Amino acid sequence: MSAVVPHKKKSFHLDEADLLCKNGCGFYGNIAWEGFCSKCYREVYQPAKQAQIQHDALRKSGQYSPTANNAPELADEQAALSKLEKQKVQPASKQSSAFKFLKKSPTKEIKPVIQELRRGSTESQKIGGEFAEFLKSLKKKSAAVEISKMVREFVDRVQQNQHLNIDDLSEMVQEFYGTLEDQLNGYPVFKDLSSETIDKVMDFAESYILTRLYPYIFCSPTTLDEERDLALQNRIRSLHWVTALQLDTVINDDDPAIRHELDSAITDIIEMDSKRSSQDKLQHIVSCSKHIFEVLQQSKQGPASADEFLPALIYIVLKANPPLLHSNIQFITRFANPNRLMSGEAGYYFTNLCCAVSFIEGTIFRIPKIKSLKT
Amino acid sequence: MSNSRRNSGTRPGAAGGRIQQAKLVLLGDQGVGKSSLALRFVRGQFPEHSEATVGAAFLTQTILVQGQSLKFDIWDTAGQERYHSLAPMYYRGAQAAVVVYDINNANTFNRAISWVRELRQQTAVNTVIVLAGNKADLASEHRAVPTEDARVFAEETGLIFAECSAKSGLAVNEMFMMIAHKIVGKHASPNSSQGVQLTGGEEASSSGCKC
Image (cartoon, each protein chain N blue to C red):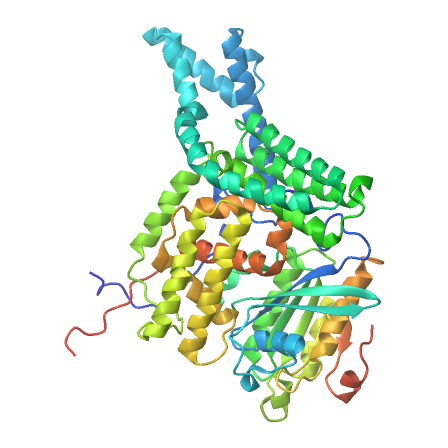
């Protein structure tokens, strides 16, 4: 099948322009945000979203008139639709159901969410118990009560606002991390807490919040994450023929000891999906990376560096094809405490994973020419 | 990602006594010795003499500078051309970038120049950028990049410049100390980004830092 394709070894290329925000602001774009960075995406899409909400509200109350709407494209759409309506004498309910479909109503997903809530309740209870245990260990009771109250109130607040779009939810959670940390460092009731204790409180709060809210915020039906997951999975599946050698990795997967380390790395990255908190997910990425370093060290009989690590990670991701990889990355990006992602080991390896996925998505892999069938 | 998440040098809400964190990213062609430089700085070792290390792409080192603890998070990157376009994901939010080239290989210097230009365009003005010519221990026989060329380029672009050797340890610690001073000092005067240079040799290794 491949003999016709010319052999080009160094044909991997990902254009820089593909990574940057389409708005040219210099930050990084993301496919999930239509190629914009989150800020520009919001700026571009917020007015349209507002217009849609207004439009829907007006329709519901029956006062809608196209001229009253200040979003021209929506007015046009509405005008075209009412023309159709006149021609076909369609019942109004059909038209509004078409609009609902376009809006991707979350109502259809309520049932599975409830089921998942039940499945996840043991995990929520576990982290809830650990958090409570930790708070009990604090000397000052009033501080413990205050922390517990703030965190629980926040979880309730998000649950009440679960219909919000994912960027707004992300912002809510991120804002809460900031407020909580500021208060822990500033409020008199917390002034006896050491900085280590504050770090622990922050960790527990993050774990608890994300575990509790997981069903609403992971691979949410209001996002395109599910489609992207499938696309990425298919993409990786289609690259099953890529070998370690083609990626220029030094991995020697014939050796059983190395093979064992490779399997551990693959298991770790696959199991990331089964964890709910961002810390646990990141821990799996770190552990996978450590196994990769073992693989590299044993393969080349010497210490490895980033030059060898990234290709090896790409190879592992291709071999593992981890479930819901895009959703997991998005979940961490949106909801993990940013301190975790900008610094520390976990942040570093997470960035590498993002790079590996970006490379897999954006690179044209060429099937190497089969040298000779005779030999 | 909100703006507040974008340049988090110190931890938000951090009190004065807390350790300041700085993300430092290593860029440069494959095989110029990026990770060896980091290892030399962090562990005082050169990989050849330390079979025990599994290898490292992420290292941390805490140092005391101007009475303040500064913790470096050192991010190594893959230097191959094919991964070049991924680099922004690594240097986003970094306080310092060390662009490494091999002074015995002119191609690596050319790539370093393009890294520097890219960094100047893509990163905040107060990002500390360092041009580091590694493998100075081999320079007497194999030098391909004259010190003067690199020094002039560094001066024009306002970089810290150092010729160093991860193998012998020459000027490595001094280079990192200079970065530390710049980062810590930055809080006092954010716009002090004029070129500072560090020439290899006894002069540099005897004096701690010339900031």
